Amino acid sequence: MVTTVSVAQVGALVGDPARVAMLQALMDGRALTASELAQAAGITPQTASGHLAQLAAASLVTVSKQGRHRYHRLASPEVARLLESLMLLASNAAVRRPRTGPRDPHLRLARTCYDHMAGWLGVQLADALVARNWVELAEDGALVTPEGLNRLAALGLDAAAGGRAKLQCRPCLDWSERRPHLAGRLGAALCTHSLQRGWVRRQSGSRALNVTPAGWRAFHELFDIRPPAAP
Amino acid sequence: MVTTVSVAQVGALVGDPARVAMLQALMDGRALTASELAQAAGITPQTASGHLAQLAAASLVTVSKQGRHRYHRLASPEVARLLESLMLLASNAAVRRPRTGPRDPHLRLARTCYDHMAGWLGVQLADALVARNWVELAEDGALVTPEGLNRLAALGLDAAAGGRAKLQCRPCLDWSERRPHLAGRLGAALCTHSLQRGWVRRQSGSRALNVTPAGWRAFHELFDIRPPAAP
DNA sequence: CCGATGCTTCGGTGGACGCCGAAGCATCGG
DNA sequence: CCGATGCTTCGGCGTCCACCGAAGCATCGG
Image (tube, rainbow over all chains, first blue to last red; front, side, top):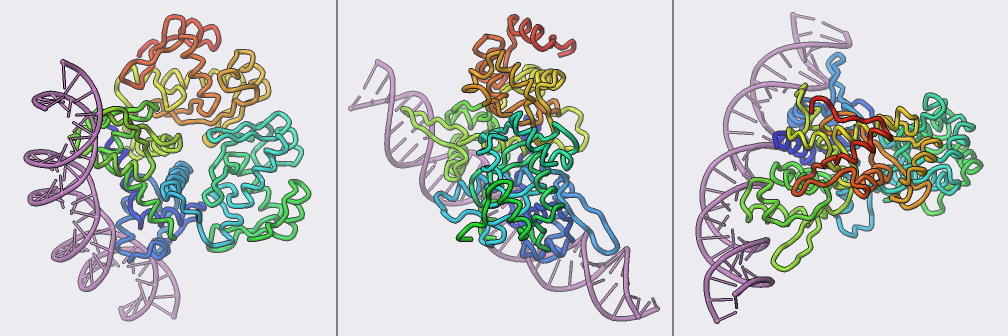
């Protein structure tokens, strides 16, 4: 097993609290400077520098220097998916810790998960599409039904995804809700579509998404989603 | 970030060569004894015992005792997927190591990947279904086309998957071939179907699959797949 | 040219953990 | 009842590595 050592090396990289904190801070796809990441992880810049060098050497993050800043971002969506898997198993491991995921109510309501929407809103959207039989979701795979393909195209979702029949889909188990939401191209298309129409807005300096009044109207009309009673 | 520590703990578990070797040995879904796992990892039984206790405490593996043996298996498909992600990034990190994956030619030709088929055969099957426009595969999601649903049902694949329209699908990047193969329920159905019809047989004590003469005939007739020239 | 800012490298310290030998419990076979 | 097998716990050793202070380079603003 030659490759085993490599696998363990990657594992060891995500086995340190400081490094994981930095990677999680990058999970929305933004690029952050070394100092920002150091602060996110609660360590000094010189320690962070060492960690970032390791992450870059293993191609988990990429660096681009601009002036005296060095911007770091996740090297690929695969890294984001690795972190997803990790967070999933982490909360499973904390046996019956009822309060899963982040505490910030904004984050719990709606947030980005790399390129798609997660949180309460993400799960509601997934449920709505499943209820309409546009999509089937299993733990381990998703299926967009023929009807769903037509309806989603009629909504203009295919434009955001690059044309008809490009709405590949995959389930992504929601970190805070512990139920699947939509990822893959369909999930990404839903997210960009919602951002373009002004249904949701990125909350600066965070992965949280704010739902606008227009957004609540649209989600209600299209998917019968109302603001939750108890946030 | 309360949960961060948990995430790092799981990461640390997959950051040790011995533990990763044991988890990889479990990746085909079989249950193995502590001694077998110790041998697979190249460590003494007492060391393995400690590792397995940690893995069990974190719910990455489950244990069931039978007589004086204790059988260990992966606790859930999510663990298998975590390892997939890890192996993927690990081979990426090994910059331009041309020879990816295992060296055993049997493993490279065909093997199980938890519940579906991987290796050369798995990738060929995926390519064939994509070429027939039954399936679309993207890096980050899959789509079974309406035509594909009908054709796969006609082959009897839905029976193995539990009924019509239960052929949810997801892509899984092949470890040795570095190209996607089919996972999810469709992938699992293809695998059980092939096993039931005697097209492939499990090679005992390994994740490798042997393709039978009948299998080569079937794969050729249905998907125009022939044995590779250079194994 | 100079100080300030962002980031890195270097050295030394401390804690964590993987490893094995030895010994202790269970279970099976006879 | 006995020895053999499978697995675990315990203790001590060795190593690795995250951490920070201090110092060294780059870049920006003036």
